[in-house]
Length: 452
Figure 1: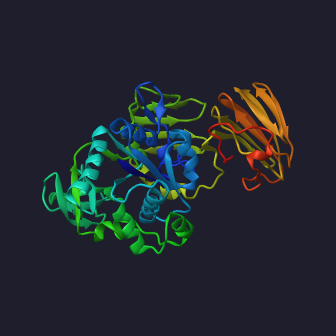
Figure 2 (figure 1 turned 90 degrees about the vertical axis):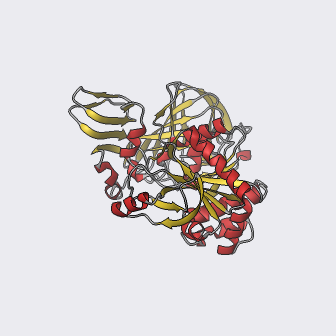
Figure 3 (figure 1 turned 90 degrees about the horizontal axis):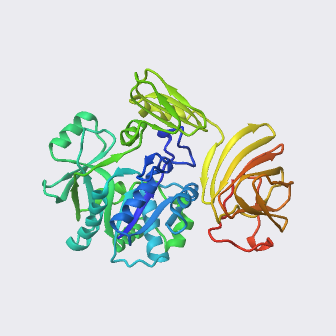
């Protein structure tokens, strides 16, 4: 089974946990059997492996999300990086070319495309596996998964099947309607279009070449920023005549708002929080190291992170985006492929960050022109390389790196470091990278070329 997971969007409707770097699918909010928490992308990836341990998974995403993906899923997961955002059809065309030209997948193989962030159970993955089999067995160009509607939603498109059998030809696609029209569609047997579909790889490559002038994956990657922004439904789905829909009645939730996300939470509080006995239908997600106390609240969500604090009626939380668009601030937390960082303090000429590096990972070998840095190791063991000189470090060690000094840090165990940046101009642009071979050290497994 070849699966393309579409991972896009900044998820501003889940502010303050999501931002332009940390999208909603990376928020660790779902409790596992071992008591640890996992994110949407971790959950769906785990579920795929439970249904088909040999499934080939490729995540189509933007450059800003690749570090979070590798941090949460490991270095082995396949990633097809979009140079910029161009909607779902260009993303799928690029991923199809990546599978064919880079991964050498046969054009006769079935490929299933689905979003990375629905809340689903095991039967969903059994259904998408069957969707791929329909493409091969029934000789249709496209097979889509139609979700059983639970209410007359205005935020989904609808698919009208020719009949009410489990697998049917598609009679028509319907645009996102108002509530009255949605009720009419549901009365006619229409299903939600959840953006899940399957095709033979050769079919998608043919469609891509019909609509885009390119030679191969590398050529398409170079031309990507010139492509029109267009959805897969508009470009391909609604024009295809040889298409079937499979009726799906299992659990499927689009967790795009705080209201829907809290419905999927197994407990009222994630993080340190206290609800008194007068609270009703209240959920708290707290990522700060301070307690949150709620008293007398009803139908509310409270979320606290380094980015800000949200206190909202659950229904009103769906309308958060235009207000968040007005907020402009530095990113305060982000996951990287080597670990994560959290901004602790911001001054005019200094920035204090807590850095956590995963075992066996490192920052890239780099220097800064306009700032000095001081690293204080809080816990763990590792090594620093400063102007080619390697030094073992552990809790309590302090490392100074003046401007123009080449430096990196390697984690032998999980390594926590307080980094203080000092200078008149502190920005992510003030960084010069150097090839790892210029250092006096040897490469370690799982290294990465990104840095805070």
